[in-house]
Every structure is written in C-alpha cells, then in structure tokens.
Amino acid sequence: MIDRYTRDEIGALWTDAARFESWRRVEVAACEELDGPTEADLEAIRGATATAEQVAEREKVLDHDVAAFVDVLSASAGQPAGRWIHYGLTSSDVLDTALAVQLRDVGTIVLAGAEQLTQALATLARAHVDTLCVGRTHGVHAEPTTFGVKIAGFAAEAARNRDRLRHAFDQAAVGALSGAVGTYSATDPDFEARVLARLDLKAETISTQVVARDRLAELLQAIALAGAGLERLATEIRHLQRTEVREVQEPFRSGAQKGSSAMPHKRNPITSERITGLARVLRGNAQAATENVALWHERDISHSGAERIIVPDSTILLDYMQHLAIRLVEGLVVDPERMLANLEMTCGALFSQRVLLALVASGMSRDDAYRIVQEDAQRAWDEQTQLRGLLEARGLEIDLDEVFDSSAYTAHAAAIVARLDVVVG
Image 1 (cartoon, one colour):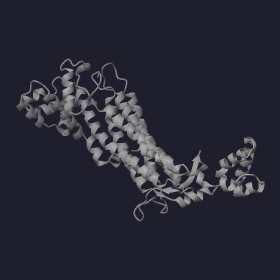
Image 2 (image 1 turned 90 degrees about the vertical axis):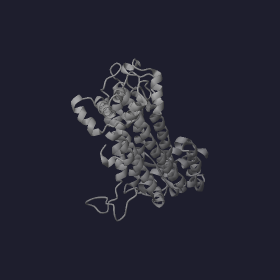
Image 3 (image 1 turned 180 degrees about the horizontal axis):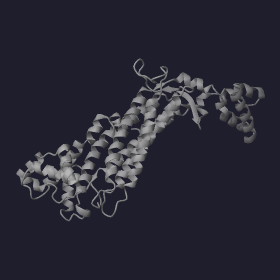
Image 4 (image 1 turned 90 degrees about the horizontal axis):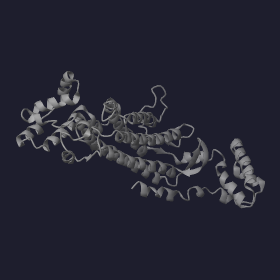
C-alpha cells in the first residue's frame, strides 16, 4: 500500500523485514522442537539473520523466495547448525504459519481501531439523543427523528463489524507444519503442535500442504463489510454536509486547511469521500480472496501473488479508514438549529402520519383520511402554507395540539440509544 494510506504502526508489520522476521521465528521454533540440534546448534540458529537485501540477491539465482531465505539463514547460522534449518518442512509450512503470526499482530491493531470507532459513535449518539432532525427516505423528508437515534444505528453496525473482525482474525491466525501434501511424512502432528505452541498459534484442522484459503476469504470479507459500514457513515455525512442541507460538517482547520485550490469558500467533505473510494478497493480485494479459495489438488501457488497484495493492503486500508472515521466522528460539527430549520421546510407536512392516525381514530375510514391528509400535506409543501392551518380550515374533530406535538418523535429515543449499552459494551 502507498505511504499516503499507511499508518506507521501497521505498516511496520508488513515490511519485507517484518515478513522475513516472521519466517525466521517459524524456522527457529521448528528447530527448537527437533531432536537433532545440540544446544550450541540452537544458539547459532537463534542468532542467525537474513536481511531482505540478502534474500533478494539469493532469489535472483534460485527464483524461489523461501529457498533463498533458507540458504541465507542457514549460511548465517553456519555449519553444522545451519543444516537443521527447514528440516522436514515445506515452503507453505513457513509461509502460512508466518502469515498467521503477522495476522495476529495486525489484528490487534485493527481491532483496537474498530473498538475506538464504535465507542466514538456511541458517545456521539448519546450526546444527541434528543436532538431533533429530519429523517429521510429515498433522500426525501419523511418524519422527524433524532440525530442520536440516527448515529446509534451506525454505532451498532460498527460494533457488529468489530465483532466480525475479531472472529475473522481469530479463525485466520492458524498455522500448519504438516509437510509435503499435509501428511506429516517427515515430522508428526505432535511436532506441529509443539512448534505452534511456541508461536502461540492454533493449528489448521486439516491442511493440504497449505492452510485452507477460505480462512483468508472470510477475513477479507469481514474487512470489506467493515469498509462498507464506514462508507455508509461517510455517505450520510456527505449528504448532510451539502450546502442545501448543512446539518453537519466535517472538521475543518480554519486558517490552515484549504478546501479548493480555486475557490476559497469551499469546505468539502474530503475525508468522507476518501473513505467512500477506499471502501471500493476493499470489496475488490475480498473478491480476489474468494477466487483464491479453489486451488489445484493439495496445493498450487495461484493464490500467492494476489495474497501478497490484498492481505497487507486490505488490513492497512481498513486501519487507515477507521482512523479517518474516528477523527471525523470526534470532530464532527453538528448544527441543531439548522436541523430544526430543515424540519420547517415542508410546513408541517412531516406530521402527516399523525394526522392520518388521528382521523382514523376519530372514526373516519383510512382511505378517506388518507386522501384528505395527502391533499393538504402536498399543498402545504407546494404552496409553503402551514399544514395545521389547512386542517383547521376543514374543521376536523381531532386534537391538533396533540397531533403536532414533536415529543412523539423523541419519546423513545433514549430507550433506543440505550440499547448501545448492550451491543457496544
């Protein structure tokens, strides 16, 4: 992933140096569980190194990165110790188990961001539990809601994504040291269990020389879903920041930030737009991960090239997007007065359902009541005439004070938002 979208902490886990260090850890752990190496051999093996530059140079000769790594690490350990490195292992044993080590560490970072985002959204929802605003369907004014209820939905979704990610990272962080075609012909299952215990990993249930790729597909699907949730939040903010709406605004550094190179007045929702665009990349990567599930027989490497891109990139991007969203939510500028002004745009037409129900309760048929309310509500909207006045002119036998009481829309807001106490934690 390009530096622009890479945060330092997670980026450091996906460097070539980090990858080879995870390979080294697997090789050392395997040697420590062999019967052959002496204590002197193990000390030499533990001290052996293989830099990215050394491996790249050796790979030019061998055209095989794991074989190149093994040669360099063995040479660094010296003889006779070096002969034990990669003993009884095949490349996938190292690659897949080392990837599990990396994913476990990466998951810690991603999950911390997911938790922080969930809490930030819950805090915003609780702060605006009674802030009345327009609810919209099809992009059109529907009925009043509260901004707290609106944001609570995003908080609950963020909590689900956090939980999905936790499960997905957990099931993907498994190793395998079952050797060629997964039969343990050069080692045994107990050896695998001991090595994985040293690495604090669980074992693949049944490996076919490789860890099954549905595990990575599940992880990238969970990442894509989390990205879709971030995109939904970003889309909402983009709509609410439109000049014609202007109910919220992204944080903007006055006096420093520039919204447009040509138009100084602009304050654009660039963070939300960035999240929206990057979510598309995550969905594409998830598709590639799904394509990687079907390999030939016990193993091929058709998955390998794609995984070297999509796994690091997806985790790096989600981490970046989550922190963009955290900054967005924590710094969001909310305008309750503008929300109230927008509620008045339709001159009371938003109360149409309450008028309809009051007429039905008074004894009128639903269809007759609907026709009356539809005519007056649309007239109020079109002619900018208060719906209440039009209804008063009809002399209807309903309590208009009760009908036009906006507290009906906030009566259950606190109870709805309180559900976050259970799902957010």
